[in-house]
Image 1 (cartoon, helix red, strand yellow):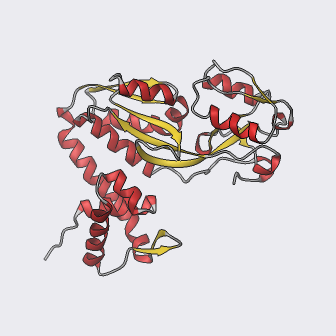
Image 2 (image 1 turned 60 degrees about the vertical axis):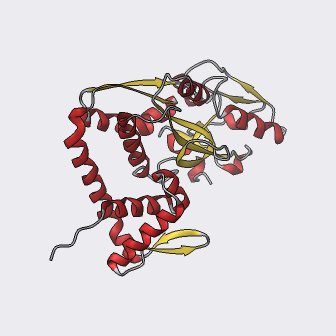
Amino acid sequence: MPRNLDTSLLRTFVTVARRSSMTAAAHALHLTQGAISQQIKRLEECFGQKMFDRAQGRLKLTGAGERLLEQAEQLVRLNDRIWTDMNGAAFSGVIRVGAPSDLVGTYLAGIFKSFAQRFPHVEIALVSLPSIELAAALADGRLDLAVIEQPASEPGGECLRTERLVWVGASGGSAYMKRPLAVSIVSDACVFRPALFDALTKRDIAWRTVFENGDIEATKATVRMDMAVTAWLASTVPADLQIVPSPMGLPGLPDFAITLHVSPSGATPLAEEMANLIRQGFLAATPIYAGARGGRGDRAA
């Protein structure tokens, strides 16, 4: 007799596995931690095998969990694709999405392409602003949802990913050694700005800004020319630049979170479809620091 898998249990399993935390999975799926725990228990009972072990306060996949993960992800994606294919024609109009420029090319371009393919009658209106300004635009109704960078210690939004902020310089460059340290940032509204200058001040490192009212391409250009250093999330560092390793005299920088925020008036069905694709895109993203090279053969710590 055929037996059917419950895709809601598989979705919960995949989310817990990718986030290594039932608490984080509960936030992502808008469920209680108790509900997440019960769903994992039900899945384990279905197969008669444990999916997770707890080690040093974190969840680690068992051998059975490792075998299940890839196939579970495929089934969840197939479920979502069927659902979208059967209902996509019902959606039309405009969805207004906000994101800082450094996340558009690294994470969101592929997500927006997938959304456009699934919902051909929906227009994506992208608003690229610093995270601080995106929060204001969301609050006053100019956006349906936004992906925002914020200090990891700051509450608010649904955490999609947490990363260290890292110093970035020209490949083989020496700008990080000069004093006062030349720093290039996109604008004075950059969410990273307070963290950078607070860290430098605490270490008594003199600094100056190259400019504070440019754009991300201008920032990249000044760093490529070894005129200055900047700071980005590790996964957004361009391949032709390098992460300045921590032993090179610059202070460590704090963790930042990439968070998903919906309109205070609530997510529309169309916004929820976009939010689901964004969640899936970040879950499938490569591990933190992949491809981001430190100088002199080191990787950022």
